[in-house]
Image (cartoon, rainbow, N blue to C red):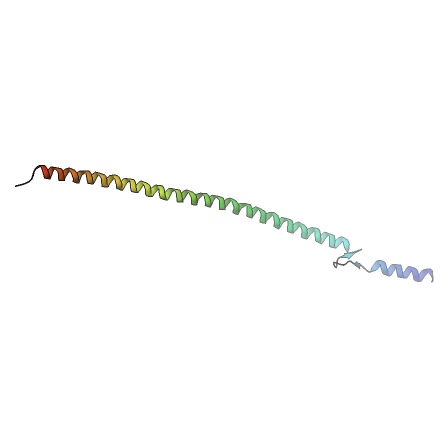
Length: 111
């Protein structure tokens, strides 16, 4: 084997990029791919941060809505109880007035 033929084979090996099992290029194209992957990784990290921020916003909104709903469910029965109490007092006053009028009527029968 001559020195020149060995050198030609070595030059061919250097010129051809080596592809690993995932299809990524090594050698002269490796820097480009690394930059591409770094850019893609950065994009994905930004998307992840955005999604995590949105998740956090939704969690806080859900908590506030839940608290408002609980407050409303507590207020509605309280309002109903207040209305019931008012109506009960009104009924008691009317009943007392009716009983007083009936007692007066029994004491003074009209002729």
